[in-house]
Image (cartoon, rainbow, N blue to C red; front, side, top):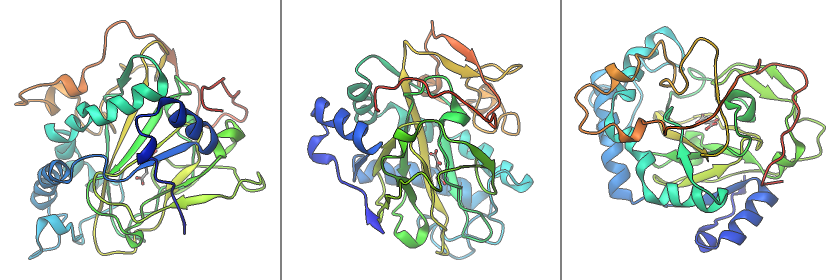
Length: 303
Ligand SMILES: O=C(O)CCC(=O)C(=O)O
């Protein structure tokens, strides 16, 4: 496994950050979030997993050992557990951490906002759950091509637990063709024959941040452990650029809505909802069919 390059030493150097993102399509910051803080968020989610019987009987919740009930995301028995995770205030408040906002702002060079559709991944061991196939986020998220994803493990994720891997430099290939695939997202990017083959990953620790562009090909490695892999996907874009919406739905509903209830139900009893608020005055574009054959590559800051 080729290792991700650690960018901690350039975290405050705007020019160096942008140059490396433009070159590699990703940036990696080990332990960017304080361990105690991440442990608190994980404990809140582990309580949901315990109550949903996703944790093996007789095991400690923080170990995240999977029970037989743990299934791949999107299966019918997934949604009870996932709705409760999506109703967890501390999970969404990850997006309010200044370490994350500051990084996004430095990279995008203007005021940013965080998509309220924060995604929690509770990944059961393979083969019960198929690893996320290699894909680019742009076809799925659309809107601003310079939307940046932060993938954040909420528990240590050694390589047997199947962390994320990125194809360094693949963002320069533009929007790739896709085919249907098993696993989260349901699509895979047609990258074979592109000549780009620099796959990178690492033994992730809790609170690491792996950040990449919406054109960077990435996917998950198989979870060969007996634990649930727990991580968050947090996305940022420039406030001045359009966000995408699906016809018939208000923009930025919760992940997996309507199989997961809408915000009024999820946020009942919260002490603050700032983590999921949408700034006023955003512009929007209608989503296109993510499987379309030819999708033009919009100009980007990072190519
Ligand atoms: O955690 C995963 O399995 C997938 C995450 C991902 O693909 C993403 O953040 O876009």
